[in-house]
Image 1 (cartoon, rainbow, N blue to C red):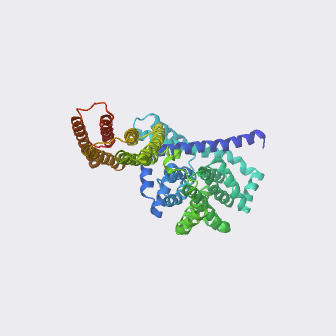
Image 2: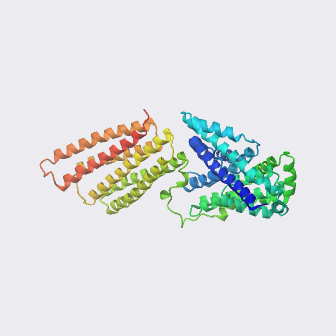
Image 3: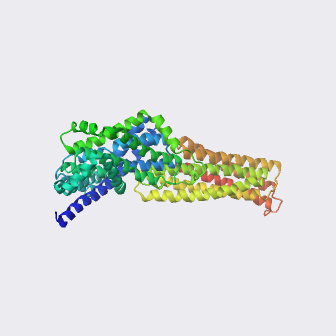
Amino acid sequence: MTELGLLNIVLSIFGGLALFLYAIKQLSNSLKKSASSILYRMINKLTDNPIKGMITGTLTTVTVQSSSITVITLLGLVNSGILRFDNALNVILGCEIGTTITAQIVAVKVGNLFLPIMAVGFFLRYFTKNTKLKRTGEVVFSFGLIFLAMHLMIEGVKPLKDMPEFVNTLKTFGNIPILGIIWGAIFTAIIQSSSATTCLIIAMGIDGAIDLKSAIALIFGANLGTCALELIAAISTSPATKRTALSQLMINIISIMIFYPFISQFTDVILQTSTSLARQIANAHTIFNVTGSLIILIILKPFKKLITIIIPEDTKTQKPETMIFENRLLKLSYFAIEHVKKKVNTLADITTGMINHSTEAFFEQKNESADQVFKQEEIVDELTMKCHDYLQKIKKHQLDIKAEKIQQNLLDTIIDIERVADQCVNIAGFAKQKVKFTEEQEQRLREVFALTRKTFMHAVKTLKRPNKSNCEMTFKLENELDYKEKQTREQYLKETKQETQDSIHNYIYVETLRNLERIGDHADNIAGYYYQR
């Protein structure tokens, strides 16, 4: 073969492979736009039970057309505390099944049908106004690109079946399967897509350039190689996240260990499933992955125990979970929003603690309580900044109307919470002055403090569980607080009208009331963001 002919083969195969990877990414992005909220509800609610979790993992991977993307998302959810390791493991079992769908699709001989498929997708994307039709067009066009990529790879592989050196090398993978597993793992780790590796193997099968046993060995390796990206992504994460990444690798290692001694018999079984070599390869991939997941499902408890023994808890090196923000979740808007919402809830809880400490500092005149407020304010400032930055990152991704509203509400909420923290700092500063009031004045002030705390806590309750009842109760309490603050201030000024109005006593009493009233205003704002009229 001439150098030019060899160059054409290489360009056709790797050009097709590059187009396939691009098409899979575009398809994944298009499907995620359409299904982010559905995927969030599925993973959030249907992963406690192993069977439901497996089904969820299968559907999720079919939806995003990538087991790697699903597992990377799971790593982010586990590392952020949204999902437990046990739940993530259930989903991974389904990922192993869902990833086989791509191979089954590309094993279909569509000939030149990729051209009308792409034409239909292009028309829907650029010549319709309906958003759903546009997204459908993106999905259809991406499928057309996948079939075009397969066509290029098939054309590139055709001459290879007439090259004895190439055919003999592939036969070596069948005769010595461990070599095929190693090469399949290395190649997949490099291109970071087991689907692409499998589809390239199917392309070789369509042209008869590879035998079934060699193809099976390479597929075993592809399943191992796809774990490389996830293992790298789990570096410097929590033990639970590392366990999640390791689980995927261990599932495939155990599956290979079970199948490897019987690879010849497995090949004979697969030969009976179809007369098409391409379909046989796709079937081998499906049966291997499904069987492996079912075996792990049967031994799930000892499997989890093994993973926990390999990666035990390590509390010494863990970064505070509060400050961990998972960029891996950003492309799935509802997961990212749920992630940052947990941080906003934490922010609200810290600020509630600041109200308690500032109250204690003011009435008990404890310097340590005031100092605690100042320390907590630093945490609030840092966490507010991180929440704000993360919410802005979410905004850069295409959001639906519901997600956009939640994102804006959370942005507004953190501003109000941060200002409540500032009011607590002001009150703690007043407490440092250790000013004494009469017993009656102090009692009235205590009542305003108590009502302020109650109002803010109800706003926090609204934030965590938004409903009309919680919102309206917050509004009611804030109105009572306004009245109480005004009444207390007027009573105090009436009692002290003979004294100098700029005295330290007057200033601290009135300013403390003003800060408490502002806390009520911010509580009212927070409830207002979530009020459904």
